[in-house]
Length: 144
Image 1 (tube, helix red, strand yellow):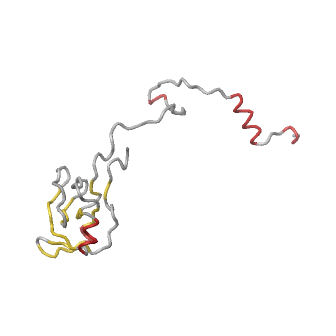
Image 2 (image 1 turned 30 degrees about the vertical axis):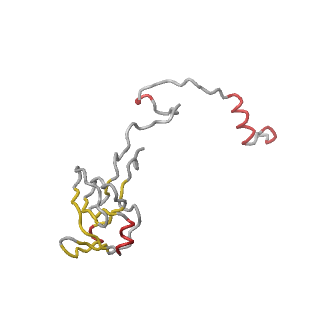
Image 3 (image 1 turned 60 degrees about the vertical axis):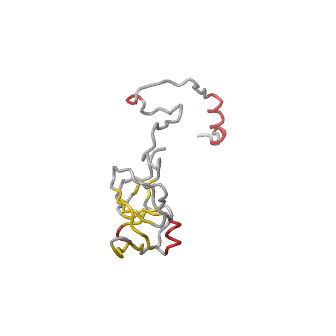
């Protein structure tokens, strides 16, 4: 083999691209015939998944800024099971929330129930340092 006749990678790529003819028209085929093809356009979902902000854990939903102001102690608010529409979060309250349940308006953080201490029938204390937005699955997080 004569090395003098070999092209560099950049030279070979340049020559190939000169002869490549783009197909601007594209064609529509069934998903069953789409194997080994290139998409002509982006695939865009018509819906967001999840369709609303929801809890990723069983725990308590609250406003992170209230946690800072109140040293982690909250009045207990509503109970929010999955499939129910909550009322807006009341200031200074933490709402009992379950996995998949929609976050109430005003809440931006969820803490797992294991990280809380029930002080009384009407009050809890969050024992861990939360991060704003933790344990929340945001609208469109999986598919926008």
